[in-house]
Image 1 (cartoon, rainbow, N blue to C red):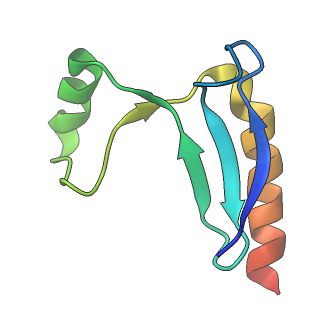
Image 2: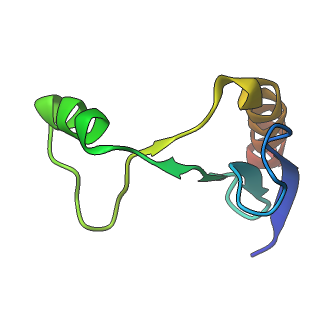
Length: 80
């Protein structure tokens, strides 16, 4: 597996910030984000449980352009 780096949140300290990658073998998006607060998790739980192997994270809206770019790359990878 190799992760293709797309970028970090430009408005954070550059060390501990939301980040976007694409796995070049299976085209999965890999996202690092802020852990959701309990209120957000509670609202998410209204539609189903959160398994131990999953997490609710927040990605700032300013990363949308990087996520779009990563989605485009993931689609290109998946088509190969």
